[in-house]
Length: 538
Image (cartoon, rainbow, N blue to C red):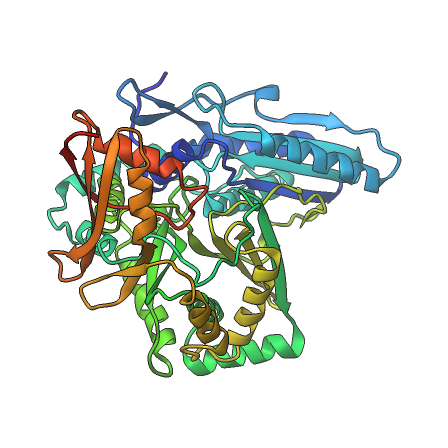
């Protein structure tokens, strides 16, 4: 093993997520159809140059004895360790396409063992002299979406130079390890901890989860997902872009405001937290392949006047980008602060991602071959822990893909959400809809004692049923009784507290773990952050 060094903030955040959900998939891949006379030898030379210069493509990652991850840069691979080239015997290109799709799917399903293998799998499939398929998959611990785009650009620039008889001139690359070490040095020397303080303060006010007013999900949904798609073209697209320009925001910012407006129609929470992946590369690091993407929360408040939500979106995005350089230690502190302030709960996350257009830039093309996004799209299962929105903006189309966790939004519920989202792109200034009033009045007719925790300004952050929490705690082995109440918090808001009478030696963390295990039956259960055990007869 070469010398080791720590992970970037983006890598560490993703590593932590994989430890919590080992089977989760975050596919980073390429599937290109190459038409024309491809010189395979030159192509492999170009590919090897990319792997040589971009250290992130040679990373190994392992966990030390004390449970912390480290990484190192390995050697440049040769031959089949670099790329698998194969001739595919197919009756026609349609059959070839099915084969290529199956190969890509098989690679995407494989787990990454980065202590033993490189973080990529390259395959070049040949259908004929004039048709090839390039399939590449990357570990998300090594390559983010920007890194993928940088790799594609560099690969075909190198091939074009070799084709012209020139040595590829791509500039002296900034080494990945040097970037990580420089970031560590800068963090040690930086006395101003305002960035970490910004996020720690936000963790004490941001809602830890999204809660719908009514049960929109399917009880049998489990971890399966529902996918809904929508798009704007021609006159509808022109009208959408006119509305965003009139509001003084980008098309993506307008859709983000509409997304938040739709969410507010399905919740009594006065705040919603929407996670947005942010590229933390600095200007000098803009050409470095690696994993620098960090999901950061944009927190939006229920609007009270026209134009308020759009203004919040602009202000919040600026604040998030300005504070994007948070430390690995801050990630741990943020999770701890949120758990202590609002308690533990089943996560229902809301996220939005702005994807680039589908077209490969003309500068990537070469005189002898045409490289296109191929027809080999993998049919993999979509994943989310709540609601995820992907926005793709092309010149002639803007497309949305919404992924709903079925236990949160059923097929019917997700269709209703999409309809409301489309409506909000016409007018984001809807503060409380008719469906929301009706849903709220219906939910108040049951026997549940639903209360809310408030932040320092009186805004509702999270709701819960006190009787449900007390019954859950009282039902734990060794517990005789449990009392749950809402009291004042030192920040001026309210907090959830529990007092449990239990046997001597009862462990608080064990109680929380047992109660968390009951969450599938009570998905809205909140586990108090402040639990006091009073020992007594049981």
